[in-house]
Image (cartoon, rainbow, N blue to C red; front, side, top):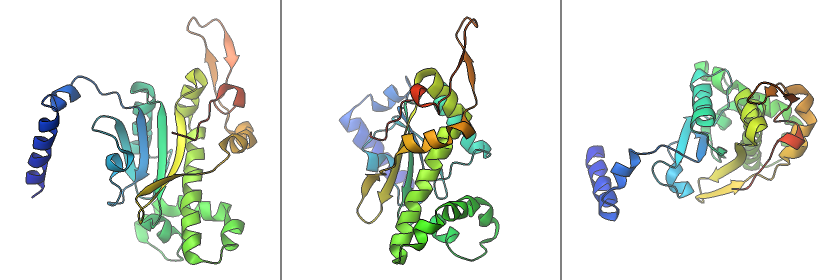
Length: 232
């Protein structure tokens, strides 16, 4: 069945453009790195309206930015330093099983090693979450807060910092997908304010010019050296 689906898809693409697949061999230059959840309901390229070759993708349970995960850091480094992506999308989704699991007082076995970071998000924002009375709204807000925290981890990551300090990119975008509506929502977060607040913690790099003569203190978290865009 799946192989038949593949053949029909190939036939459709070749009908639209006989050279479509041949052209894919000549270049691999995606503009976006997408970091999202492994949930099967997220058809990433379709929901973004992008074609094959336009999106570099890393997915895991509950769209986590885990800077000690070799899989993640390899993907991020390759995307930023070799593919030179200009935009990183961190995207969560409502009705996320990983977020729901992290909000329950239950031992999920080995899964706990992964979702512990989401439990930390609940701890960071405990006061705000406790003020929400509707359980469904608590979950939706928790999904948004989780995306926000993962975006901040990206800003703090040395791979991203180094690239932003050198050229102001990649830009980071925080999005949430509504499974029930099919729509993406951009989070209304003042990243400039948050990053400025924590810049004394995360600034880390000295950079040299190409000739190695001038040493200038630069940081992707110093606001005069970073371009922050939260709109696609």
